[in-house]
Length: 144
Figure 1: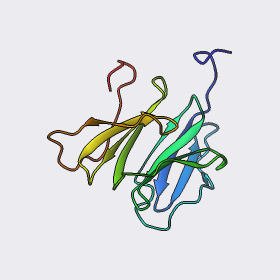
Figure 2: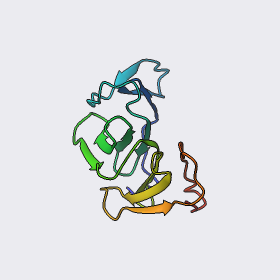
Figure 3: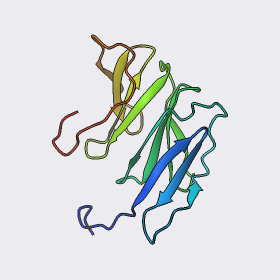
């Protein structure tokens, strides 16, 4: 079955303090379930999260540990993909088609990009930024 015809589950992901939650958007479900992903015990962890439906992983920026990590929705296969030269990552967005992850590095006042495994990292924007925070991609038009 091709990616365009595949039936993807519908759900909402959100963070609350130091936990990631999922609410399924079918059958009138309203109960949230924990993703069982161990996070730091700081109040602002994670600072941002996004989901890549192609690799079925949730990505998050941890402003307390200064890391960007990912895991499957059941909490397995957790790995840190960026952990160096990162101070206060606050925003994060995943491009499933370009296979990249973008984030704001608030302390360094830059926007960075890397492949989904954290390789090929580079600064995308460094001029005229004053504490960048949230970030959103328009993948439907092909603009970053």
